[in-house]
Image 1 (cartoon, rainbow, N blue to C red):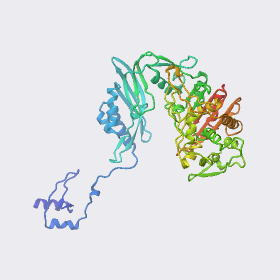
Image 2: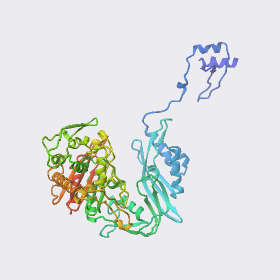
Image 3: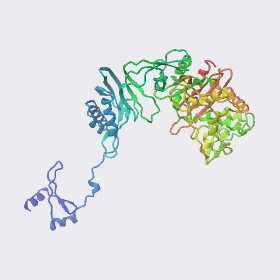
Image 4: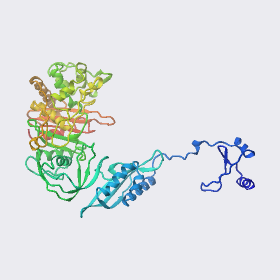
Length: 557
């Protein structure tokens, strides 16, 4: 006991109490020697010491923004482990070690990438770019691979430690979660895509067509009679709507030829138009046949023109107007209400800048894009009225289009109350893309829905979608009158100035949550040419998408 007493005297502090034991910590660096006491004077000291709660003894978890050192150190350590082939160590430094392990293992095993060199760039906030150099080797054939990628460092909320926020794009920017990298026989032979005149289509010539070429190869590679080569490819996950993508071609296959309906002059013009407007997309069709003559997107990673799913705003009023006229709820030259506000289903709807038209006709409301003129009729429609009109007359929202590459053929779900009213003006649950809205104008111009297509159905004997009924001659005549008046005197007039002949148009603006400016839409026709475009977060359709569409319509009909 004497030795224990001398330790206590030398420290000149009272020992800490832990439960029914007294723990005396000796020395530094966290090493402790514990002396156990029973009853007596030492035990009595328990009543004089402040207890330390279990919560207070827990190690503090670091929170708050990451420091520059934490970001660079974490990124460098991860990249070093990956480069050295230490998959477990690299994966452990990420937010999803299982997914990281799978993809990093496949990087060597399935993609056959060796000699990997990863060079970090200059940090920007929590993001660190890096360059990749590697060699793809398969059965004695090798080719270099270089590309750039980036990673983001985040703080683990459980431990407070920095870690790499894992996504598949860290490994390669073309990868999405669920995708893999594979080197081997492609399985799908390459293709040589040509336009309607026989000219070869390449991504270098038409930057917008990269995704289209991927889709054509996936659909027609084997049918076109080509022979597969050896490639490093991105193999899409089972739930992906995108096509597989070739990154490196080690040995060339023999391509088969696939003829498309694209018009080289219009395609070049469409590419030039979207290049001038960020986040823009456009499609041009031939109404008499459904042939797709041009498709272009300012952003090349995703084909918004064919696969986008966006609220179409007031361009949807073309379909809604046909419904109201069919049901005798509106007529072009008859009086129609356009108040500042209209409440339906608990929602208060209003017009742009809260305008109203007193004593105006339905044609005036359509041309000026009066929302309340359409919302006011919601109570006279069944919940499925708009859905049936879109499906039965315009061939939309049935998921049965087969254009030759992946596409989305619109969605007009059955809705009730306020959502039903919002759908009438292209909001609510309605979703479209430029391909769909170009088809709507094409249906009005020709009088009959013809499913758009990029590759003739005769190539693979596929069946094109059809609509179960056509508009009556009276409804069609009035709808054309509405669109012609809008092109000449309404919200589309400025954009359509100089577009002559048999014309019709409709503008649209679709509000998007969290987006300051609405998506701008425009759909129109001129003779045997129909087109539609969207500019995301661009503002009013007449000012943004309108000039793009009008410029293409001016080229011919």
